[in-house]
Length: 131
Image (spheres, rainbow, N blue to C red):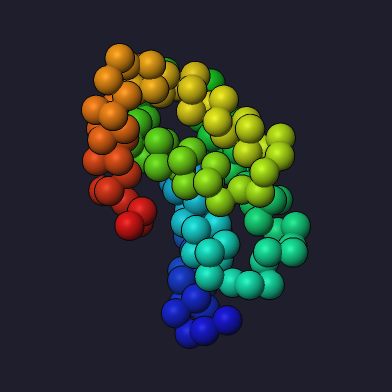
């Protein structure tokens, strides 16, 4: 682990211990944690930690989707679902992210001009730690 990862981890853990943590904020923090480690830490490739974090995040996102009518910022939820789904190993958890994306963002995915809808999704994702 390098100094940058240690700094990010310390900040994320500090925020996760915040007693006023909203469900959306928790989802964003878990997604950021997953994003920070998965692509850059070789030891995680054989570890169950990313899958555990992804499963926990999936439950949080599903609960958030049920408790609100997505009055939550949709862009933040879209980012969490796409990032976590893309960083989760193939299997049932990753499939559930795909299902969640189709259910809640199906209008993007079912438009006749799929390229235009992809650009709309990509434009939303570009607002975050995506690129």
